[in-house]
Length: 639
Ligand code: ADP
Ligand code: ZN
Figure 1 (cartoon, protein in one colour):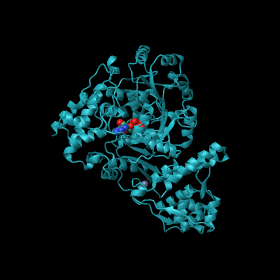
Figure 2 (cartoon, protein in one colour):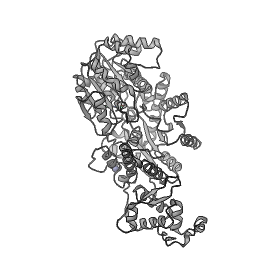
Figure 3 (cartoon, protein in one colour):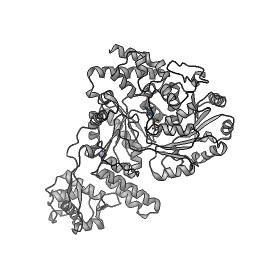
Figure 4 (tube, protein in one colour):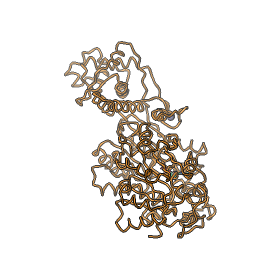
């Protein structure tokens, strides 16, 4: 088991083995020699410096921002063992695998280990043969473990996914409430708590519950500039999505979120029938199936996961290139979390959502039902309203999203659908009056389908039966198409001019605001649904990415592989195959060997020898040692 803990902190020539006494002298040394990166990102340098000096920190950084390095580097620089509290076994396993690949002495303690293995890890910890120990919170607070801690030389406590301490949050873990015991028993050991949770209440709760009121807070921007946001009106959602995937992501991995288990199964089966390999994931599947599907998703390239919200936390896969929503999430927090799983590696990624009348009706009904409400329900209402507002906005989506998290983006982003294809708005007052009048004159009982028939003057059976062809509104709406009327009704409901009955038939009633429109006391502005979905997204994003000098030409070409030269494309696939083979041999996910960004740089730079290879981002001493030859061979073959 010795090799598992081995650490070679030295330069590129470092090898397995000893590891003692050659800690990197500085944080920058560690970054370069162990992780193979040139410079720190964002606030990393500041945070690491603060923690290395022994300060407490609360780090609020979005997914993909680079939180892990904020404690992993202090763990290498400071003397002693860093204990990382992490809520999920899968997460610990991935992190430890990746660290060992880098030659770092890391291990985890959780219920997946047998007693003998666990004892071996405990021994290594007490003897100082580890730099990082990942541990589950329930294990951490046991008397046995607390006793081990007393006998260990400690460098740092890192509390990952710190929002798990929040009782209102989605991932509440009661054991997190007991973590303040660490500070009580070891007041001299610095602590760093980290989370990607963007909402203000949860942040306050973290500080209070974890006893971090004195800690320095490092708040990063929560913008994810590499994600392109899109919301399209639902027509034939599956076909729309498939077209989107074929156009933008023919070979990429991604996640598709659906509301119900049945829908997850249906959509996954349908995608497979369309020749796109997809797996289902929801809480109704047996644990073994869930685990096997998750494992396959992580270890292969190009697979699509169709899932309920049960899937996601602890998925560290950096090259998830798209996240699709076929149903509306229940809040913008949820939407932000779920879409945030795309593009952790910083390369362009897509967040795509289809949204239609049924979604609005459902959310509205949820709103009405929570009317009774105490303050908690009022909060829920506000969240649903914000979600609808995001869908219907004709402004920059990123501005709306960040604004919701109390962050101001001064200029429109240029990387969302409303920025890329500006939405027209129009004076919809007269159209709204016609639509509302149809509701009123038919007795406030019908949904959009029948009302549109009335407006268009369609002589359907129902129209005849109810004698609705005698109404004044019959046929007054021929100036708009059926699709346009659907859009009008959707927006009237979203804007609260109509409510939806709760019995589930989706009949509309006028609200006071709706009546005001009918009485000409109020104007209505509506957005025009885009006539045709344009096939865009990642390609344009990539072009901009390159224009800003974001990652060099290589990045842009490969993300938009259509635009890659045939030669580059062949090399890219050969490099991926090489990575897959190595990963399979070792039973690890491919991205643990090298990230896509490193492979893309290989395509761009075509390094021919080890010296050049060592300069690639993501190539540290240990990886140079282990993998340079295999990849150099591939590059030379394609020279
Ligand atoms: P988070 O935990 O905040 O979601 P990670 O720690 O997983 O983010 O980092 C996201 C990605 O960014 C990883 O692929 C990581 O290797 C990379 N990364 C982090 N810091 C740097 C850096 N300073 N230079 C280059 N890449 C970095
Ligand atoms: Zn925008």
